[in-house]
Every structure is written in C-alpha cells, then in structure tokens.
Image (cartoon, rainbow, N blue to C red; front, side, top):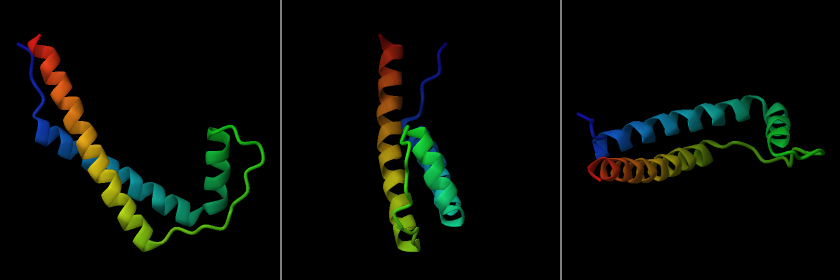
Length: 89
C-alpha cells in the first residue's frame, strides 16, 4: 500500500521550512553583506559583482518571509496533489 500525502499538512511543512530558511538567509545577509554578495556572484557566474548598497530591513524581511511562505505553500499543495493523482493512475 502506498501512502498519500496530506495536501494541507505537507504544504504547511514546506511553507514553514521555506520561511525558516528565508529568515536565516536574511540574517546571514544582514550580518555579512559583502560576503553574501560575493557568494551570490559566484553562484550566478558574475565575475565583477559590486555590493550596490542595499540593506536588509526588518520590514523587507517580514514581507519576504510571508511571501516565501505563501508561494511555498501553494507549490507544496500542487506537488502533493500531483503526487496523489499519480498514485491513482
């Protein structure tokens, strides 16, 4: 017997984990802005990245956490729905 995913429970877990990762990333960027810029530049193959002077704000971080939580909840719900549908066929 194959277990199905509970759409709401799975979506809440995905949303919570994503929000925690986003919050941790915001703290890291606030503490180490130059290193974060260099890290992202190497990730995206940008040879001459310059810190443009933007700062992490509390308001921006809260808005970002809420946004990431909503997007990841929807993505988790869609994933669980597709996964459960694939079990039935």
